[in-house]
Length: 292
Image 1 (cartoon, rainbow, N blue to C red):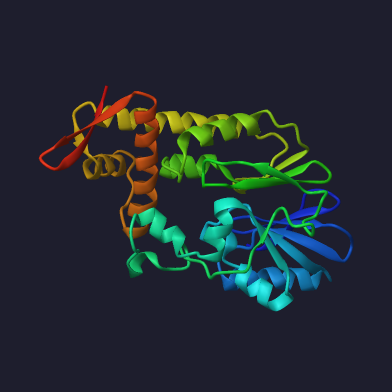
Image 2: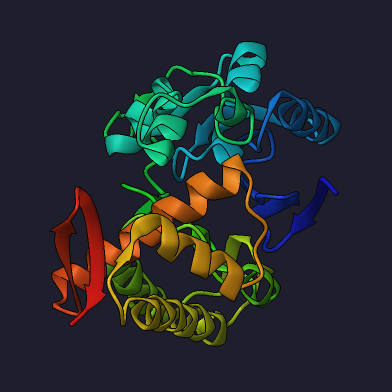
């Protein structure tokens, strides 16, 4: 864990739970793509940078989930580097309490205020700043989170953040976190058409061909949607739908999974309702979902 893997002359990634990209602009200066999940991750990253004699110019954040920005504060404090982010992701990075609050739908109790969902705040500079490396392409990849992006760097390497999950993850958990299902599917279509030398997803193996994995992710989205539609053949309150999703996929519920999977199931229901596949009724002061 935390091995440095080279994928081209100037591009690397640090192999850790959420892969951290390293773009060496020259022999002395590097940019990170994300920073890991906490201060300890940031410390390990700095050790790698120091070992290679690299100066950290900036961190380019793909999105604001805690496992991607958790090392920001430490690395910024140690090196004075800039942290680049954009859109809603920048707000979540400045005010990370927004992530568990959004997932829970209210003020998060202590069970949700931990490093896996609540990073330390960090000072953020917008992508539009003139200091942002001009040779790096910002690629919008919405769906998993609000304004998530990927980064295309010289030599045909693209860092894809969380827009695809590994087959192993999908087979084990099935319901991976998605904020906007329609946007997520559009992002998968976009990635499937990309022509690049190397693709580096945060939670899957780096590969020169991403198409099969994209299709596997897309198929899993439609499978989960069909499972929810099946549950809604009879009018169901949300909590019952969530229970059946957990039981159907053999998931273990705790506070964190309740928030993550619950938020995702709500996103599926919104997508299905907007697509005319489910409707709602209010009965006995309860909101019930049913398949049309």
